[in-house]
Image 1 (spheres, rainbow, N blue to C red):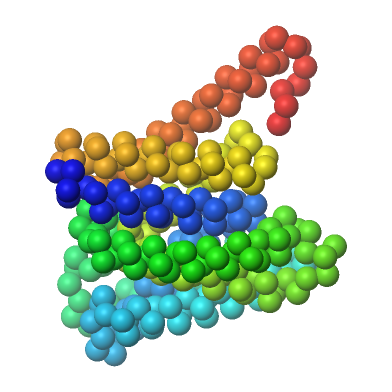
Image 2 (cartoon, rainbow, N blue to C red):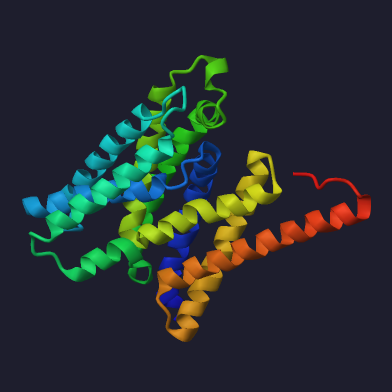
Length: 279
């Protein structure tokens, strides 16, 4: 059993590492569903690739999905209006809905195994192999290096400090979303849309409940991701549960516990000091 779970567990560690960091950016920007939207755009690209005749998991199909993801990154970067008349989240939602509809229209006209559609949503984490683990490790490491060198600009965009630094917001938004899209396109093939969303948002939210500095948030978020992965994989092996769903449920439990601890902490502080809890 340990041999079967070894590769999925390492894959979860890699997913936690990159997605927690990107999730902090996503939560700071207030574009929570950008992951789902870009994942759906990637699915649309994969569906079009399948309609052309590419194998679903072939390299041409991957680049077709990635090309659509880059296009989605361009749309999201252009949709960031400075006067906030139209929230960026509205554009993200529209792109998700339209991409989802067109994807199913295409799939309804071509012969695609139903399991392939289910894998897109639920993932195939339990069946990931070491070759795939090494592949995502190399790709995510490359993306991580880009973010290490450009972190100040990316955080300036995410924290609305770009105007003070006179940065080209749309250019740096585009670069951020392209790197983000590369990660999402790879992750969805392994973990599915819903689990990738959980890895992206839940650890970041749990960490941001308690901490303000980026370093502390990363450490806490990584800890939450690792803990959820261990609990989910163990529950899946023990009770023969769907692996992705078990990990997602573990994320939900951890988020609920973090919220409860925070509320108890705030209530206790207020009763002891008589002051308003510190936010």
